[in-house]
Image 1 (tube, helix red, strand yellow):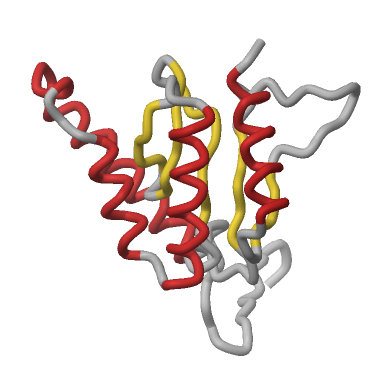
Image 2: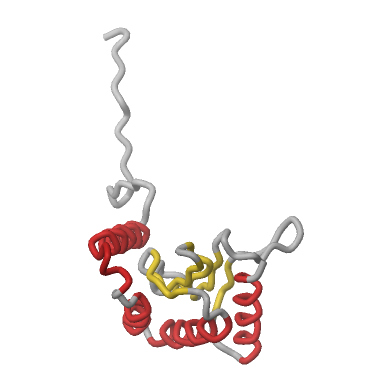
Length: 159
């Protein structure tokens, strides 16, 4: 038949459809939606809620290697920038100023990565010329790493 076209059928070796997000990314988005629903439900009770307990519970769920790093990051942030409020953000421990996330900890397990990450949002004041890093790989917590994290946290919250 002239003028009639049919779409070619494409399949992969496993016949899986890729829709743009990994299972881990979809899970993080679902966690974020749940966080927003939970906050909205609290309404006036929000002041009574304890986001730090939620962050500590999330850290406690992590595999040991990630948990050790997250516990130290939490302690460093609390000591170096007490004005940052702990909260969950996409299911990750995060720290916010005036309700806006400044930094967060992403466990290696969360996205099946080979290392955990300490990340900073655009709210962090880490500006250094025309280009600067906004996330840092963490493989172990050494005294030098702790000192560097402390410096970054202090710089991130100061104007």
